[in-house]
Length: 216
Image (tube, rainbow, N blue to C red):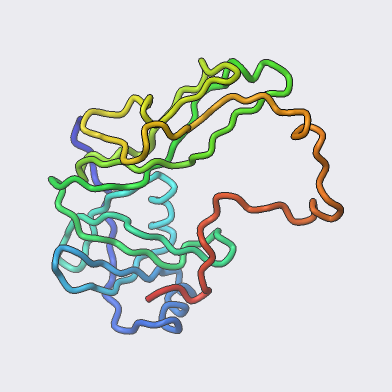
């Protein structure tokens, strides 16, 4: 696998910690974060919120974190969101050696339209939005793309059938289904929502609810 450029991000060491200090940082467009791992003391830092979230949208997992004159590679280990699940409020970064193997969650991207969807009453079921992979820290894929164009009715793609990059292994059960074309049953097609149920649709796939102040 070709050598990849690792994005660099500048952070500032922060002296004050706690919910009130974290809220003040967010008001200034900064994101509170903690760097830990590799038998070193944790360091409380702040990073520009917009800069970090832009990297998240690019499926970035590995960063070069610059603190003054020191630069060290770090993994995005944990992200905390606000109670609506729309805004990042805190992030944990863990120091990493580029030559060590790590386990990370990577997004799954379905490509194409399944052949079976040409039949009326069919759906493409895709219960997983991401997958756990084990690989070198320097070779984490941005995402795993899954071609579903050949899927017909009652056919599926499992984790074990994925064509993964060299040196990248799936950490989950190989029999776990990623995508499947299914025919809706008569019950599913005719099922009507209970009275008033359509006013507030269920939010699926959002991060767990966090307090507004986050963890610090």
